[in-house]
Image (cartoon, rainbow, N blue to C red; front, side):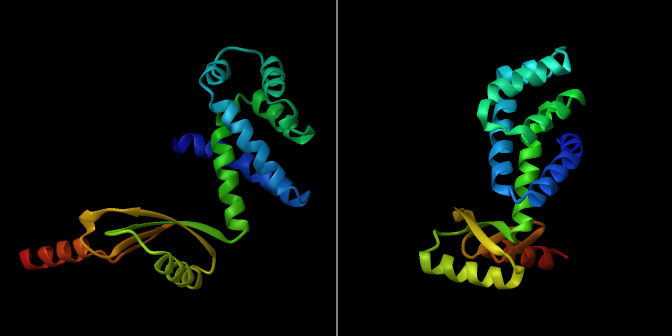
Length: 177
């Protein structure tokens, strides 16, 4: 998976920079999401990994995508086909989304709590996280009763663990040492 990310990153970055330059980030995001879904299709994936000529493969892919791809999107597909990288389109789409979120100063935060959070608690948490992270926050809430109480917050590389389970584990480790 990391190899695919390494392959996809320069294409995603180039597409994102081009989209910003042309003020068409939303359009490119739609095109890449659609193209990524097409490339992720089981039958199409077999074709992409087979021994088909690059120009034939790009023509087939562009025809399948139809009007979902504009001229620049079609050019990207042709370049990817020539370099045998069409199978990386789903990852390119994912990385493009990440570049857009970073550009828009947005972050998805996963929150796991011992019990369901109320709307008021979610609003307070969003306000606190937006202040701390200096980004617009989108919460993904999950419930895990094994935490006993409290919550675990994952925001990118940042993890805030305020669960009772974690505190009890640290106390047990300290007592055993």
